[in-house]
Image 1 (cartoon, rainbow, N blue to C red):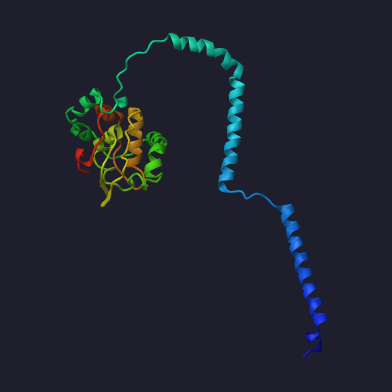
Image 2 (cartoon, rainbow, N blue to C red):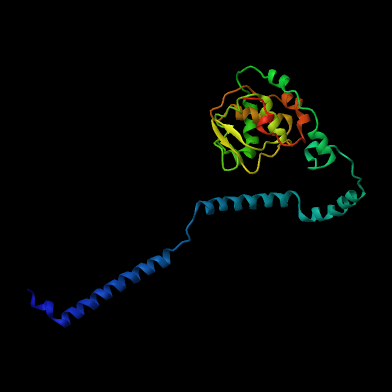
Length: 251
């Protein structure tokens, strides 16, 4: 056995050498960290940077095309015009107040005949790419609940490979114009969400036809296109209470 191992002076000195080496190493690491530290950059930081750059460009373009001085100068004339204008009564069923006489009248109206709409379904064939592109754009609103790939979500059932999507066209149009509430079974699974689907009747006939055509021919679905005339034929549904599955034709 090495006789120096029991020497307290040697052991004491080795301890302090080891401690000193450790402290020097820690100090070097601290210096390196201090001069190279950076705030972590997340995906949200990257996205925010791009948004702020775009915002700055938009504000610059707006300022160049319409200076604040021009806006302030136009305010008195616009205010005077608004003050002198008179409201006009406009009948808009999609803005009916729930519980009002108009809402009660619409709810009591006879059921619409959808047979003509479903019989007028065009034969399966090539879908106009322009219609699909418009439908894809309109689907951004639908995708917020149904999922951008039609997979469904916590507040809406799936559209992918749904028998309701590829079923009678009148069902989809009426749901779009009136909304839907209550349980619905899709591909053998029942869905019942606390808040039903809201009506999206503010869209034009062409927009509704396009988005329904897109849904019927995306996410594994394949069905005939929907036309603006079919949507127009069911516009009288606007303003009526939300539908339930019992109100729809069987898929």
